[in-house]
Length: 249
Figure (cartoon, rainbow, N blue to C red):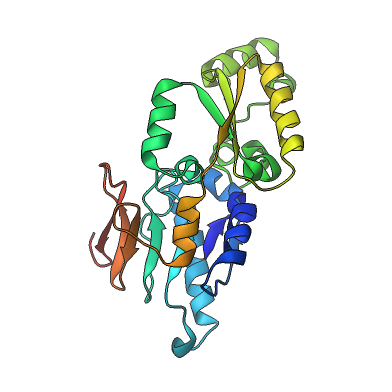
């Protein structure tokens, strides 16, 4: 399994119960901040490094990716063994257990900011990451830093132009996946919602997709099973992702 670190607790719980032998490689959440090409390149390098460390007869039966499409950050990934990935736009679908449930909640509650155990424990500021898109473009969202660098009037203009990262959110939903110190998560999220004047709610998580992914239960509706010679592509439809030829341009 190669997966985002925000799933660490949920994945560990499922691996402990899985009938499969699962080796784990977690990747930093900050990969999401460095752009599609850099994220995909980092993941491809990880795949190739893990396989290069073994002889072909010791390669795994499959590589499972605990990721969604993630702003196209998994596009182009390929391997000489099958790759399996959930048909999900992002991690919220995986944490809620299905695309349908995520879509229903999102449509009924626009402007929702979701948090989960991993998002709370592993979150960070993209502006602090030198490789992030915002840092590479010289964009910062720290008002005090902008005032010091450009003066108050210019800082006010820049903040208004760039916008507050959270200005379109109105609700904070804490997803309870049944792992970790939930009372601590609850307090953190309630405090954040109060500070931002947001509605606070709790959602029951569902790790069924993680369970199936880590147990080899890969139905076509929920998972893409990529064969050697194929690469991950965005399908731009309800399937979210599809297979394309490695040699396709």
